[in-house]
Image (cartoon, rainbow, N blue to C red; front, top):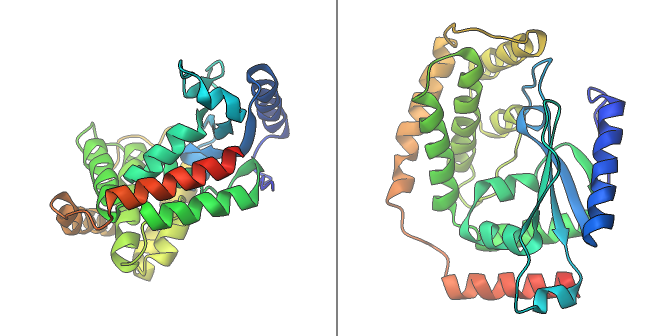
Length: 261
């Protein structure tokens, strides 16, 4: 599958395709999932936003049986435009099983460079079965608090607002642990007021038009929303695990073995 919006520059997409092809060839790996992360996939790009391609790769089965495990990350040269790197399937599955929200988000990206829908759906099913909601909630709360503690700016506010919206989504979807990646969908599915959605939409439109948002303050309605979500999500800090660790690991092992054939 492939989902590339017209807003992405064709020349940049072609370069990303080339990098992915080179990675697969030079490292002898299969790439069943490659997506865009960062502000473009989060739904609030700036005119000068770089491209953050992330991928999951799978090595031939026999290479997982070595006494000397290989590095579980592949990186390509980083520059002002391209940030393209990926994780081995082992790393992705371990982190998803622990409730790592970053790894889970990759499966919900609205921008897909190349992907096996079946692989994505199987890994999403695993995440839904084994990921701890509390771990996912803590991740988003800590990200928001960390960003909030930095020098205030409208640009930084987006990196507070999105995790706050993810926390709201988790509060509304009480039996799920795999929130969407992009801010507009989080707000739409998070049952927030029309005022919050409208204020976020206007701020996104402003960010899309200017390279530097400056140090102005975000709308009061969005600031209140963030504070409410962070206060409410404090419950995740002391929430006990709900999954049986041994069972989750067994499911993750079964998924891994099936995927490497």
